[in-house]
Length: 387
Ligand code: GAL
Image 1 (tube, protein in one colour):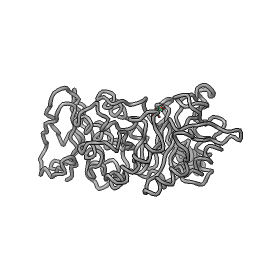
Image 2 (cartoon, helix red, strand yellow; image 1 turned 180 degrees about the horizontal axis):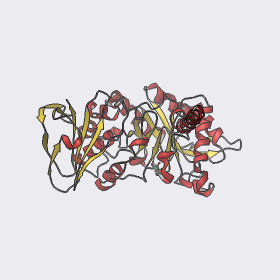
Image 3 (cartoon, helix red, strand yellow; image 1 turned 30 degrees about the vertical axis):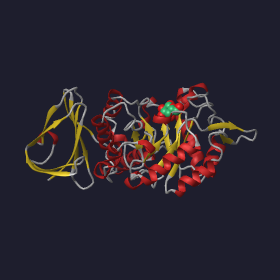
Image 4 (cartoon, rainbow, N blue to C red; image 1 turned 90 degrees about the vertical axis):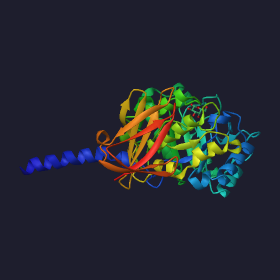
């Protein structure tokens, strides 16, 4: 009996030790809730400069976004220059003459700075990247004052075998940690090799689960809905990343942009605006900054929502919240308005609930057994319901 107990205890210990790295590999103070910020890629592509990044950072600091929780200004591909004979990474001297001064400026606005590079020799655009220079690049980034690194696979296949991918990510993560500066590590390899199963183990606070998003409804809604089933891999310190926001980039209507925000918040996804913040409409700013909607994304319980009721072209998503209430997202993927019936019992909700519409910021009253909502074409409704 005693031996059996000991065997049993040893087995438990093995399971515990095997299961814990995902939790303890994290620097717990980083990314307790999904990171928020802005990234240059979706609207500027490679056409970025010091002046553009400063203008976007100033806009974010003053237009209500910083107050709403947006924090990182991420300089995506297009900043790179060359490694000199001592192996030191330099930014493109014409576009980014002084990276440290730029980081100081952004920090002075009360914001943080992110940067993009690749484990391969070149970025996806064929610019200089970090292969063979990881440690020095991590030190250079820390010296500049970088707070976030997006590590994009790009040309990684040219130098690594598929089974070396995790080691390549862990190397940069370890080198960043060794600088002593807390630096977020964002994996970008488009979801290959089920990255959600190992992204946290190699030190990632977030990992892209998909290919690149684009500014059209099909791309956006599929990127979001595809996250269903991955909820068990997300939580405080480590998040699934279905790619950045397209809100305000001009090719969708505001209903469709609302749907991206609704879905990303239910997913507890990182929220990186991808539009030109210096030129956005009041409607775009409202979609990006509604505090009650953002509170769903940033909820302390850190649970990624899931699809609880798929029915033809409509879906009901649920996300349990720290205060015991539930966020409900009602999505209409169809090309015309649809009525969605929320049946409390089938969603495991109490018989009687109070509902609040978070986009309208309005209490809707008390409902018994069900509530019925009309949702516009490609639109969404976000409710918070409680007993
Ligand atoms: C892609 C990445 C994009 C952007 C781009 C820059 O691989 O998914 O988000 O970073 O590279 O070249």
